[in-house]
Length: 342
Image 1 (spheres, helix red, strand yellow):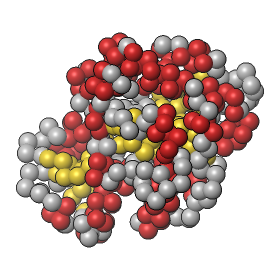
Image 2 (cartoon, rainbow, N blue to C red):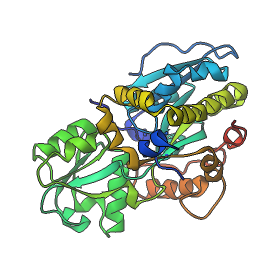
Image 3 (cartoon, rainbow, N blue to C red):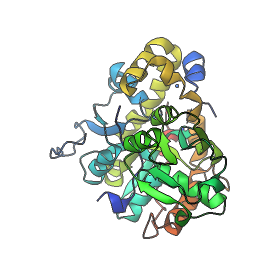
């Protein structure tokens, strides 16, 4: 399975209180084409992009179980093998909405895009990892070592967060920029000393004998959240359709809870892994309930609040040079769709 990361920044272009424990969700409680976009009308399908991340793959259940139709909204759901392609498609107007991280959305806005977050799918709570070779026991041990990640991606961001927490900077390591799949392969082959990857590439990287997870997104709560993000113009012109899309998402979570076995089969098939492998990612992706969606949109003073988290992420991205200009976050979140969701 070769899917580039779900998190890119503008200089390179132009991926979640209930756990996704599919055991919890499943047991009792879960590319880009170059075609010219059609004209937007009330009858036009909503064009939604998604890619390889456990918090977004449930959209495949929505599609296969006919839940968009049940919600009364036509949708063209487009899978992207490369997440960067989905970002480019959204920014080019070839998608109406895309599945992407908060940090990536902030970075795109800093680059001039007009985007709005309408739904939180999940938080990454361990499925983004910095994995190190045998003998590297702490972040401090990374000093002078070769560390691979896809430059400007969510796991590059996670790496920089970990370095800063340990009192190090990017200049203290030898950064090796590689596409996520290639980075995992280089680590397994012993070509680099550590790697930043996300599930399912975490499984691949940990096949190197003696390797361990040095730190993960679990150590930085709220820093990596994943969303349905739409072009602001589309939100303003099509609120009724968008409301039905949001309703369909929560109907999907109910479907997965009610029918765990067939849902898991759909999820694993779309991810390109076995059902057993898919369930291994459960704890690392925390799916948001409807009530958690509503609470997350509210102002606050912790990373549980998306407006607070957005401000913190914006500052950090500028500090490390991954965003060149301060983004306008005043219209980033639109809570009306989760507030009105059925």
